Length: 301
Image (cartoon, rainbow, N blue to C red):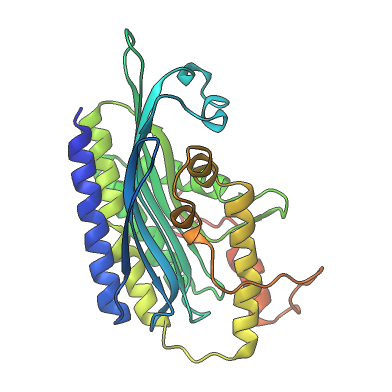
């Protein structure tokens, strides 16, 4: 097991993604290095008021400490009393154009150690798409690339990780999915480190081909105030999920991570409306009837 190799890969992944997004947007990301007093630090790359991206962040973090927060040990009591080390790349992109979807991607590695005991380690990650106005060809493309990322590791991974994604990115209090899903995995430590690392790298490497073609296809689509208002309303669901349900947000805040970097995932303009629903048959209602339904976009059995 080589955690230095994981860190090297993640830093390179961050640089590659930021460079490509700067090419698409035409505006540079702000780069901030930060230190965590309890141990470790990271580098945040953020863009605001870009030509294409209204807000986006591509963050690297490598943090460590002598003990885990309650949010981690409640689900994994065997980790209580262990030192930990966590490293990962996490990104969220909020385009300005309502026809271009929001996207999230994360790949991470975690290790917990205790003197006299075997280390506990695992990989996790995934990517998911949150459209405001859905397009079937975009959803199919995104899921096809997700499947391609996992294919070298075995055909069973995509159906399993797609289902996991659908279940994880679900707003229980709203009884609706956050978006059209993708893939999600956690606690990956079988059959060995090399195999798990290879799968995780493939997920990270497939992010740009999964998302950039969709972004380039949609960001110049004409739109008006109606579309912007609906985008802001649906962005509220994104905020609700990240602040109420997302385990990564909670872990970051409870371990003393950099708050500005953790909350860069929140969109810059959001609206909430009381007891609102779209008119039946409207373009806005189509998101609910045709896309937020946990669909099998690749028609796999």
